[in-house]
Length: 151
Image (tube, rainbow, N blue to C red; front, side, top):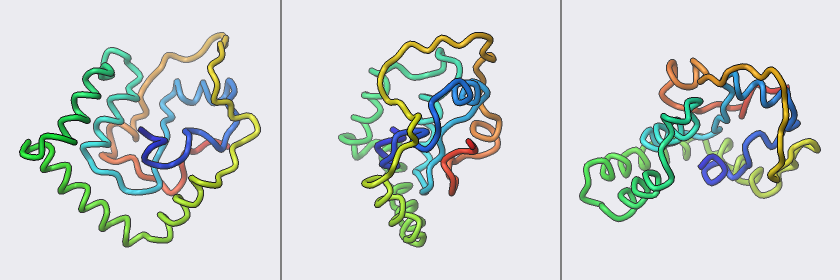
């Protein structure tokens, strides 16, 4: 979902190494540089939950997306349409930010250590996975001018 909305793979600008894995275990999650409708934010947060039992199954995600697409009379779908219009207004008022993220999505340069192929990661003594307090509790949205706090 992150890549579809932002046009960028998550953590494209950082080395995919043990430090990134540890930060993700400690609660690091990708952030958007545009406003995103709240219903979509809630679904994304569920998908990224550290507790895999809280994550929706693929079938549930498909059902949610189909409902939003095809059941226009549904109250949640109507609310999503309203949120989309509101976020489009906000994002259009921030045109510079959107233009740069759109062009970035087309021509971004990934970090040389960003690896997007399946591979076995064998790291010892990783911390227990947790959700970031600010990502899941303090903020209802996942907007940031920077994608993450990684150096």
